[in-house]
Image (cartoon, rainbow, N blue to C red; front, side, top):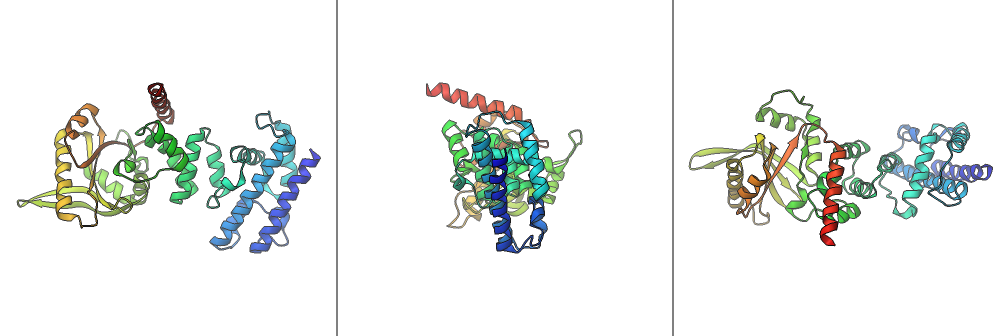
Length: 360
């Protein structure tokens, strides 16, 4: 135990020395530096990122020392709570509150899940990693890590996307090979299917389940929360307008929401429906897509994408209604509450089991 304390404090001393050298933070009070104080040290964002990188590296090394020296390198060994408590008490007295018992457990887990330090991203903070390490499923954790890096998610955005089951919602529309690729590489957008979720989750609108509301009110609330709506839609969406007028034979029609997707280079039209979607709504969206393709697209634009967002849908009706349509038209459900992650996870397990049995 004493040898481990010496090795760990050596790592922390290296961190505090590097921190002071690079940023000037903590001079004269290095013994009380901790991860909670970094944001309030008056340093610029570039230096803050450097400090966080040093912090993550130090914590990874501490985790390695714990696993190597207290468990003889066996990551499956039981780790005594008394040992962590003693180590936490000693480190907190010397360096501050960043070394709680739970934080030491995360440091240990960081090394176990990322045994090669170079696989850690310099874009993610320790707070990102503590959130990621609380995800037990390796595929889901890998997906959220890749998305944090590629989409520059804050910790708050990460928590929200995880809470709404983003990985499970995207994976449920994929086959087994796509799920593995999704986990390894994050969400890669190459075609219109890649931007579709089912369901979409609008819990941020804070509309009570029992409250009656109109399509106009739903649209207004989405626009009032445009930032969160764009986060739920995903990467690449740029807002163009609402109630976009289309005039045919002196008759006006209105598309609820129009976006442009900068990666796919196409317009994305969204229509909102409170109840169950019917074939007339699908036919109307198909008309909008034909109009945009002929009247709004420039030579550099790809064909538009249409999404009908409804509170409910009949899968068989949707299949028949979209069967002969050549346009990129999708029907997804939306819900006003965070889905039950256990249900999503079970559905995903069943999907992968079916894929496995079909392969055999």
